[in-house]
Image (tube, rainbow, N blue to C red; front, side, top):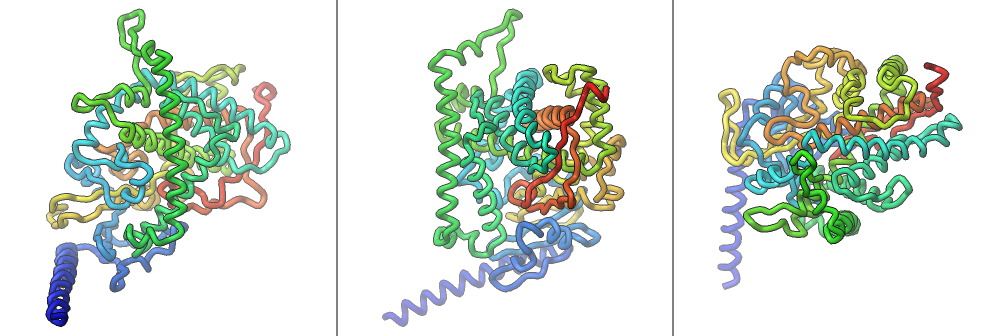
Amino acid sequence: MLSIILTILAVIISYFIYQYVNKFRKVRETLNWMPHVPRKPVIGIVMEFSGSEEAVNDMTRLTNNPLKMAYMEGPTVWGILSRSCEFSEFVLSSNTILEKSDIYTFFHEWLGTGLLTSTGTKWKKRRRIITPAFHFSILDQFVQIFDKDTDILVDKLQRPAADKATVNIYEYVNLCALDSICESAMGVTIESQNLKNQNYVHAVKDYCRIAIVRMMSSWKRISVLFKLTEEHGLQQQNVEILHGFSTSVIEKRKREFVNKKLNEALQVDSFGRKNKLAFLDLLLNATVDGKPLSPGDIREEVDTFIFEGHDTTSSAIASALFLLANNPKHQDLVRKEQKDIYGKDRDRPTTQQDLNEMKYLDLVIKETLRLYPPVPVIGRRITEAIEYKGQKIPKNTFLTIFIYGMNHDPDYFDSPEEFVPERFLDTNLKSPYMYVPFSAGPRNCIGQRFAVLEMKCMISKIIRHFVLSPTNPPHKMIMVSEAVLKSKNGVNIQLEKYDWEAAA
């Protein structure tokens, strides 16, 4: 009897192995029109990646072919890696290729299925709810908050600047950005720059690091096996800290309802126009199919926007300051523009109109986002077979748009490793989809204007108060891809106070 049972089990297992192997064989045959990344039995292409420090270099190497694309196969999934701007346009402009790839599932324990990670009807309904929070009329209120929080940042930098000291500017910027996103979008003051909520900052970093480790592992991707590791325990601790922080933000804002402050915000102004609500207020006041959002629904959106609203902008701002410190000619041009806008009064409150006039700083930010895009890759999964240039791509293929690779491709940008803000004076790019720091198409970044205004506000005020210089010896950033592209060894520059009046 036992031998019969074992024989049946062997037949069943053999059948599933055959189906599994046959499925991958058919996929390989269908995608034989593009180069294949070398793979090993069971572990797939894992050996082609050297870790987060070399991730962008590895992906550049793997797409270094005439198509700028490569087929990749893991133990359980297959996909296409591309730095082709044509393929970028094909994917990002599509109204049907909207589902996120499996790399985003590693963030579900923290972010749930909020706007970043959700798909289908849920994504469309959430996008519709949240879009008004980033209306241009609300951004005026946000600029006031950016300006106030950056005043605190400038004050924190005064002491190291007086000593002409070297600082890791990322650490300062990160706390300022966290204060700004919480106060502007959430309506809650958290005082991170006064060294509160440090555990949240560290938990974000740890969670992202672990998520990338899982992505690059052939077996840690499997939830059952990952739960056996020490990293799983650390991740759970991080999730508890992250959710505790966002829950405290939500509860604090809810108390505004009790105090009827939100009801005041809902009133119309003297012109009969209804006042617009900030992000968290919209969530607390929203209904879907006649029902209010659940506490879990609200928290996953708050988690998503606190993370995206401070970590990506922190990376971009710190990178811009680093580039200006190492390119004094461009720093001088940014400062000249500030003088033209502010005259003798560098400390007057910044307005949205001021930020709109910062045309050269806008070029600097665009070039920074090209050299160091905070989000280096975008992932999608196709739910039905499709055709690209007459070639078939099978159902369930993961599509990875390698933004960093496009930005550094000499076929798209002349002297791609050089810092040349003026290149963006020419608005006629070879393709509008070869430069997509905020993604593009239906799933573009909803907060991109928010982010650019915050970047401008923080960078401009720092340039008005300090001269930025490279360290001695020069600091070289070691860029790692940990969900957000950032420097593993900090962003070190030297600061010196700038005498605005004497130089006027």
